[in-house]
Image (cartoon, helix red, strand yellow):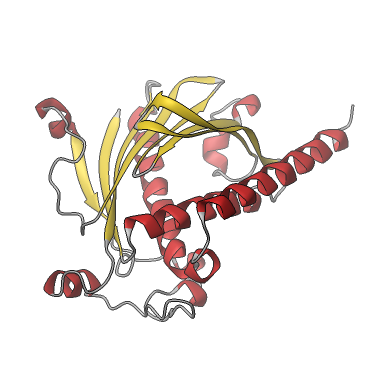
Amino acid sequence: MLIKEYRIPMPLSVEEYRIAQLYMIQKKSREESCGEGSGVEILENKPYTDGPGGNGQYTHKVFHIGKHIPSWFRSILPKAALRVEEESWNAYPYTRTRYTCPFVEKFSIDIETYYKSDTGNQSDVFNMSAAEKRQTTIDPIDIVTDPIPPHEYKVEEDLRLFKSVKTQRGPLRDDWIEEYNNNPGKTPIMCAYKLCKVEFRYWGMQSKIERFIHDVGEKVMARAHRQAWCWQDEWYGLTIEDIRQLELETQLALARKMAQFNNDIPK
């Protein structure tokens, strides 16, 4: 098992990020259903009590991941394994997400997240034991200065250029965290502390694939948080009731798409 703790500061309040996060999840679910052999099914989306983080919202999804992973990774998995299940428990400001593959018994990704009103300077958010701390690498992510692969660059998602119409926030400077620390309270601040545990227990491939998953995951997290900032004119001002309605509409749209896909498969 390879364990990393990611710390991702954001120039938003914890409550603003809650809306941003939920808006992005339903939007990306629609986007990820595009492409041959790809799709997302939302099996459950309901409140829970006395679960991870206390009370919250439980979601169970199935990703039919088709061509969304590299060919070398697909080649080591049976065709039936190109299906990933996601269970998430959202008891904001705590969340937990777990990914498993029904046909790959020894594979899992487990992500616990705490959202805190700071720049990522807390030392032990997860109350880990001494042994766990020794196994864990801390990896800060800066949404402005971390490099972006050239093929992923979009002008509209360049934080050095983006300025929100609704909030008038932005553009962000390279030293935006230092600027906040010099003027605390002047602007909102929060940090997503993510404890990611990746396990792929197959002899000869374990280390390579666990590192690969972390590398991909780090890029995905950095991109998602940049988008949360650059899409704020889409989600700013929405209420939790608005979000639940969007989630319902997305769930129904995805169900129709998957039903059509299944009907198109030759019998």
